[in-house]
Image 1: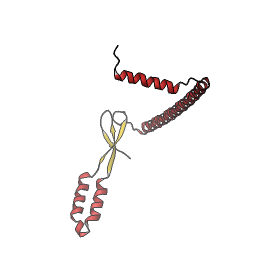
Image 2 (image 1 turned 60 degrees about the vertical axis):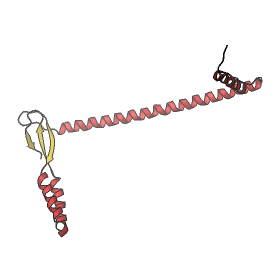
Image 3 (image 1 turned 60 degrees about the horizontal axis):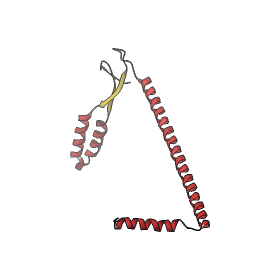
Image 4 (image 1 turned 45 degrees about the vertical axis):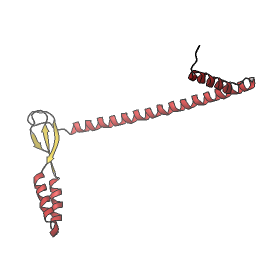
Length: 151
């Protein structure tokens, strides 16, 4: 029967491993068994501690998720109470916003940048930025799409 070199090396290494790790002396066998039992116990304790830590982490995560969900539901309930009824159809309305003076704000910023070398343009550019960023808020009906201003 032909045995490959690789197989001979594996068998030789296995024999060496068995020789080094399995002593023939009964005292050493007992001591080795005790060491293995201690290592196994330590490994089990470590695994139990890791499992407990994972469980606690999952519980904290679930508690946080529940808290966030509860807060979101409270906000939705609060927003539902803030919704108005449409005067035309009686359906609920949503609050929307849009830029009030977007074009005039851009125009003032451009003029302010052109006049910046004369130091007059800086306040004009700042006023244009403030003026262009203003928004108008209004209510929009979800059913009939009618608009009316917010108070």
